[in-house]
Length: 121
Image 1 (cartoon, rainbow, N blue to C red):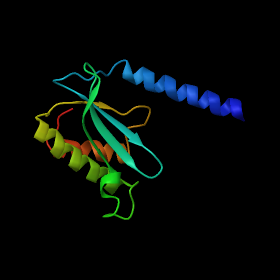
Image 2: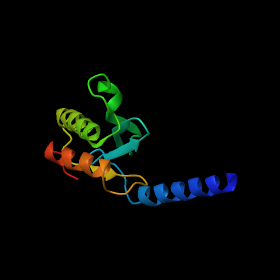
Image 3: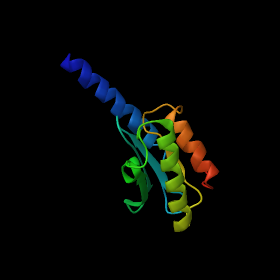
Image 4: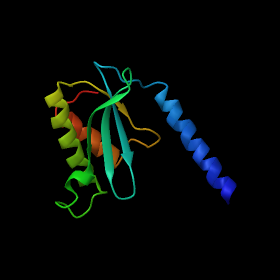
């Protein structure tokens, strides 16, 4: 049982690294990194050349306003907030880092809402 969990985690790490070696955020085109937990949705814009986070947003900011912080609507709200903050900082182009997740559901809704907000990736 323990070895199965260990192997699954190793495969996940390998998929993350496989995607990350192709994706690199610069000052002109930073990387949008997404993390989805069981209860919340987090996103941040990272400049990998400097190694710092430029802008971030998560469902923790408005958890009192909505009932569910883990569904597609919550991901869309995070995307709207992140798009506004990115435009305020002057970032219109970015690279999308989906980590090991498939591009569907919350991730697709997040990306589509970011595009509607004026971010190109």
